[in-house]
Image 1 (cartoon, rainbow, N blue to C red):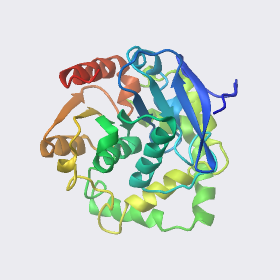
Image 2 (tube, one colour):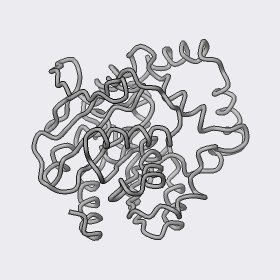
Image 3 (cartoon, helix red, strand yellow):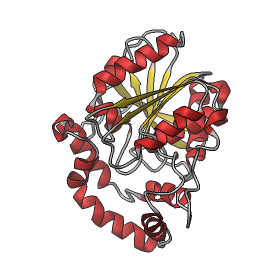
Image 4 (spheres, one colour):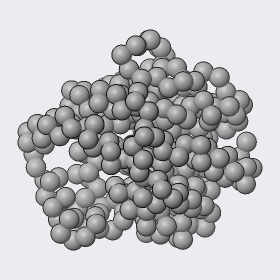
Length: 300
């Protein structure tokens, strides 16, 4: 384990950066500097131009008052190096479980946003013994068709382009990151400037967008989504919190509604006047709902 200090990247208040040797690669971790002795919490960021510091920037200090908190950069994102990019959320869940194994953590509260929300749900589904609870914020993977048949077909055609075409296109698209960020929240004023700056840095990394492109390629089929979890969520045994902004324009909140109805131990919180990045835009509400959820299930 090494912990180099870097001034050219965002480190959330209450967190320190470390690198963990895992299966021949290095996983960048953010770990709480102080914490209680409760059940550890693992945070999984979203897709696009995201990493652990972006998604969880405002949450390290409040979440680590009662427990150790760890956030990882998934392979292909942020500063993790030397590990295979699986493309599938199930593969990413396996990698997250492996990180916990190397750290010696037997059970954790697994929290994810967007793509990471799907990873958290699949973690709970496929690694039940490692899951104390699952928390999915605006999770992907809960729809059968993307928007409508025409939009779905267009999205699928985009995933069929070869990497030699997709990577240059991603590079061009990433130049407009500051404009894209406006679609992440309902109220742009809620986004801290350091988070925006870090997202721009993430978008400018070499091969930025490649890992997320692999995820979308695996998720979108020619006629329906390959990663639709709705037929499987009823098998998730761990208590689950679904937290979703009602004004989310990127991931349809109806997916979370449908999942909550199918699950035996799920709590749905639909947040008004809130967009996709609900854990940032309504971070105080999120922390309060999470604390109540954990108390309800006697998870210390």
